[in-house]
Length: 81
Image (cartoon, rainbow, N blue to C red):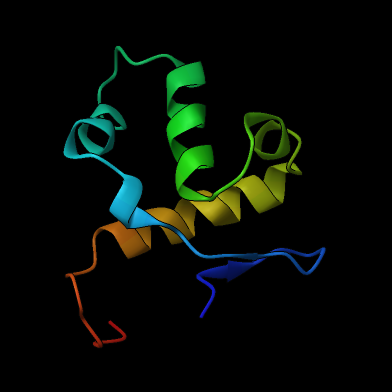
């Protein structure tokens, strides 16, 4: 099941299995560049960097909210909260 469906119908399922702990922690590092952060999120979304950067602003924002919600949920959790 998709984590988010974009307005153009594309379904995004975050592949957290390819996200390293180092990459995840880097998302909270204030010294990390925007380019590096974009590459990490694009990778997890299975998008090219160009596809990711060409997203409309509101779609990009929805992806980030959904990503962090999914990333902080316990592994294997079925609890909707």
